[in-house]
Image (cartoon, rainbow, N blue to C red; front, side, top):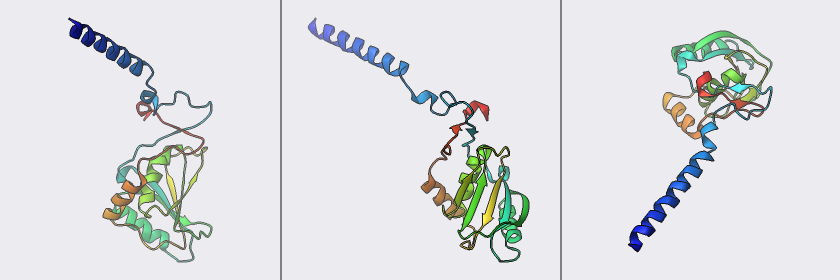
Length: 171
């Protein structure tokens, strides 16, 4: 008889514990805009397929034709290259300029530069295009295997400072 009382008491305690845990769970709203400060943009953190990523290639080096050749390389990989041109001189490997709608795309593109591309987030930018400024440190785009390894090293995209993750249902 005592064993039944103890088992019944343990089952009741376990049930109360589960109900409290479910009610107080904060992870369910982790990717939602609830709790996002007023006026902060919602960052699209979804990783897109290559064919859905829109980019502008800008040459920040003194090497003529670099934007065109890198643009062709991205086109061969099925990216949407919208524009090629020149930019102000840039010393690094690459600079990725993007807004809230381009966070996931910029994350993917960063892997093509083996995580050495600098990021320039503009919260006021309205489009989902990423500007890729090639710098003096650029040598070539990563291979498919290197891109996959870099994506693994980078982990999941995160919302830039001053933005909140876009809820999945808004995408």
